[in-house]
Image 1 (cartoon, rainbow, N blue to C red):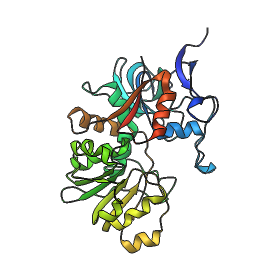
Image 2 (cartoon, rainbow, N blue to C red; image 1 turned 90 degrees about the horizontal axis):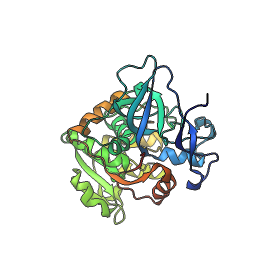
Image 3 (cartoon, one colour; image 1 turned 120 degrees about the vertical axis):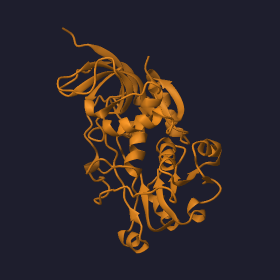
Image 4 (cartoon, rainbow, N blue to C red; image 1 turned 135 degrees about the vertical axis):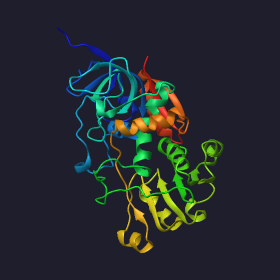
Length: 337
């Protein structure tokens, strides 16, 4: 008896967006503790194009295993089609969303009509939240949550041995979000406001109205001025851009404060200690339990997810080309008929 099939995006070689092929692939079968989900929407994230490109900037020892052909993607929203043996808390027909198998593998296989993953990777989708918005929130929402609110695990970042622990903040605190209009940034801004902080958003001036509507108290247009030259005495900087230039924010933070680069850069531990500033990073990990909490904030309107653009699953190449142009406002989403 032939195996069942589905449509999916696969890559048989690594390279540019042109290697993404829309084709027939085997339909997955749920294992013990897993759900089979009929996908309605897929969130597009940086690890998707890292996997497509072969992660050229990552040391070999840090690269997760990749087997070709590969179905990329981690973030989905859809409907439970089958419940595997031992999977608890879900039933056939439930609407769910989740970030699948991350960071254990880059083969979350989300760019497909069906996915399987551990039931613990999923949360029930709030009825008032669309599949597109639920898929858009998974990785970005968990990243913002685990950096700012609760890490929820004890696994250190592969880029730093020191364990990340979110510092307490609230009313009277000043939080700076660099890259505030992007997927992680616009959600982090809202979480910081939810906790009562004063929030300074750093982004292109074209996003000022959008960011103020989300609650930003101040917007610094990085195209006109360097944020590290105008921001002083911040309690916390979440640098959603990160990388080599993240160190520049040290001068904007008060003693006892913290800097969290999402993409870790080069820092001097002795300098950090002399300034009295904690610099830690984390690697986001799947958590259905945390997504359930994020879902409640979506449902009551505390969090809003911005969608930059949507593309049909078959047009994933165009979605990756859009991502490559940068300056996203929120998230890119693939829709599945």
